[in-house]
Amino acid sequence: MSTPTKSPIGVFDSGYGGLTVLKEIVKQLPDYDYLYLGDNARAPYGSRSFETVYEYTLECVKHLFEMGCPLVLLACNTASAKALRTIQQKDLPTLAPEKRVLGVIRPTTEIVGKLSKTGHVGVLGTSGTVISNSYPIEIEKFYPNLIVSQEACPMWVPLVENNEFDSDGADYFIAKYLNNLLAKDPEIDTIILGCTHYPLLINKIRKQLPAEITLLSQGEIVAESLGDYLQRHPEIESKCSKGKSIDFYTTDAAENFDNAASIFFGKAVQSKHLPL
Ligand code: DGL
Image: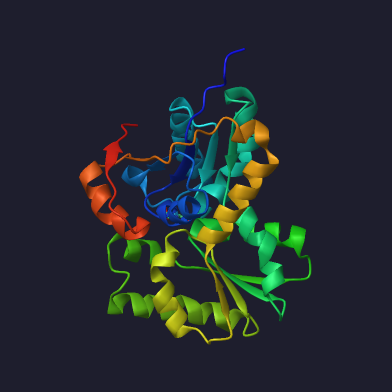
């Protein structure tokens, strides 16, 4: 009997944001090989239609499959909200029934109810994630009594992507969206940062929030949930190679990616260009 081929776990984002998730995954699951793909050439996804986000995400997932990944994590809320279900239900069965695609929304919604004491929760995300209603829908499955309010923060991804996350301009837009959210429901005591770009703004967000509000960032939660998934699914885990390597790919120019990516990943990054 031949040994099954083993390949890296794929991690996908529209651009840089997924690196904040990959960073935590590598901390918690350091033995595996990873292949990161950022679709920087077509980012941001946050304001794009369902059809476009689905089409772009599927194309990138196919690339990761072609590169051998047995499991792909959509480390992007917008892609998880707009493309994950269709890919899982419609495309996977014919495209690659033996492979798996996971998202970042479900792991976060699974735990949010355990953290809120008031039963009032806030979600901050891109316009696409908010309009999809994915968070309220998923949260209701686990915690039907939680009251969920959402606020789209369309300026936050551009601030982060343009290296303005530490500027005074960022303070203005952070205050704007936080105030809007808390005006919708002043009893909110737990806020989900529902976009993988937002961890770069976390210090500024924290400063503007009352101390009693818990801020939920996704990296650690998603990493834990991935570890749990691999334990529960030995048939997938056995296809994931363990060589502690990380390869980075971007659909845009590699030099541009490397400069910004190191800020998100916390370490120097050397990427390769992946033509679409
Ligand atoms: N990082 C993506 C997310 O988690 C959003 C970035 C974008 O708008 O492309 O939603």
